Amino acid sequence: MTNDAWVEVREELRQRVGKNNYTTWIEPLKLSGLRDGVAQFEVPTVFFGDWVSRNFADQIRLRLIDSGATVERLEFSVASGPRPAAAKPAPKAKPRPQPEEDLRGAPLDARFTFDSFVVGKPNELAHAAARRVAEGGPVTFNPLFLYGGVGLGKTHLMHAIAHEVQLRRPDLRVLYLSAEQFMYRFVQALRERQIMDFKELFRSVDVLMVDDVQFIAGKDSTQEEFFHTFNALVDQNKQIVISADRAPGEIKDLEERIKSRLQCGLVVDLHPTDYELRLGILQQKVDHYRQQYRGLVLADGVLEFLAHRITTNVRVLEGALTRLFAFASLVGREITLDLTQDCLADILRQSDRKVTIEEIQRKVAEHFNVRLSDLIGPKRVRTIARPRQIAMYLSKQLTPRSLPDIGRRFGGRDHTTIMHGVRKIEELMTTDSQLVDDLQLLRRLLQG
Image (cartoon, rainbow, N blue to C red):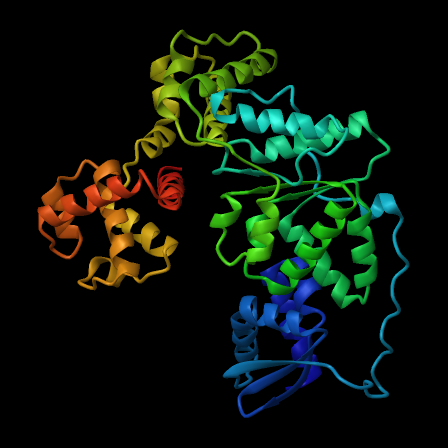
């Protein structure tokens, strides 16, 4: 295969994977040979090759085949020794950007401030902890770890902290970014031979904020660098704020030493919203919309209806209200309960969705890393029997199915077996805190 043909394949890949992915992962690849159905590529680092192999190998192979090449698999090796004389000289390290350019993380949303955050029982501890961090002064808990399901306010609080710190202490270096951006910067530094600049930057910040840290799980090199960055900042008494969709101990494939470090600070759960909190959020949004949609009439009972019916996700709740006001404005009608039910029929149907036994079985099998066929099948070893009893318990709690019906879906078991499994879990819940945590997480995943 000629280099010209590879250039054409790269161009097609650029269209398919997007500019950022192309620049970071595809462009640095050098096709060094194609023999016996094996396409051989040179890569900057072992980590780089592993990442491309896991995430882009299939797409690369298919595009090569489309170009007429016979490719059964790809091989990646780190380039060694000097390049051929005809090759371009290795690029010199770029000049180090100025601090203000370095510190550009994810953009902050101007709407996400403490003033716009509605506080209720499910999030009052998280709000108080975030306020304490944002006010500055001596670091009392490090890191602050916020976790909870989608749409419960984690990112809002992260942005609010960053806004408040920058307002109170403009001299402090604040860096807010997602875990994926941290990984992207790390890989880019490896590729451009600027790893020392990367280390210096991340160790020079006063407040480091990393959103959705669960995304570095399983990525060994990134976890290694995150661990050392974390330690360096804690040793300097610099504040760290982390968010994730679950508690540190529940993040699969996250190194134990990182879990331990994250649990050393204050770990705060943002619980699912209750009725009062949802109503408060809606009332705040209505106050904002009254200025935008002047003259619109909102009938009594509409907000209460929405707060009752849309229960799991604040983003869905706010989106429903946005759609409702826009629709009423376009058709020039009062926002009544009838209009609300017509306009939001699809959202309301989704909110009424019932959890199924099959969903419970899949989530439990995934959580405990057992095969679904084993969970339903006859095996009685403890590593399968306990998850099976948990799935039986959740099926009884979260679905309207009868015990005999549940038994039929667990491989045709008798209803007395299901009853025994449910009672066993209820007994263990009084003494096994890990089991309680597992059940809470599974409930969030199933109902959120």
